[in-house]
Image 1 (cartoon, one colour):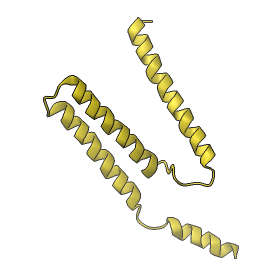
Image 2 (image 1 turned 30 degrees about the vertical axis):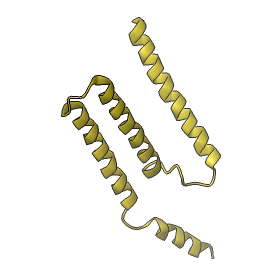
Image 3 (image 1 turned 90 degrees about the horizontal axis):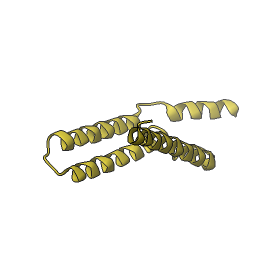
Image 4 (image 1 turned 135 degrees about the vertical axis):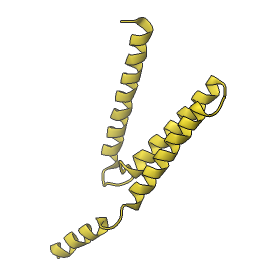
Amino acid sequence: MQENENHAAVNKHAGFPWKQVIGLILSLALTFLALWVAVGLSLPVYMTLTIIVALAILQAFIQLFMFMHVTEGTEPVHQLIGLLFGLFVAFAVVAGTIWILAYAL
């Protein structure tokens, strides 16, 4: 019985990784779209930044679901804790960088 479960688990992960390929294509498309908005269009700065930030947030969600498997797993609490810790670290790095650049410390 255990052997059948192991074979089922192996076969479940076998095959071509279409989810990762689609995620890669979407990530590349969003990256090149942001580059085109920044370089190819002559929009006001606030509009350019707004579009690029929106594309970055969309790309972050795509990568969370396609590559980091946020929806998979048996313990969603662990995933939430890891996600919140990652957001805290990202916020600390960005806020610390802005603080250092603003006050030249």
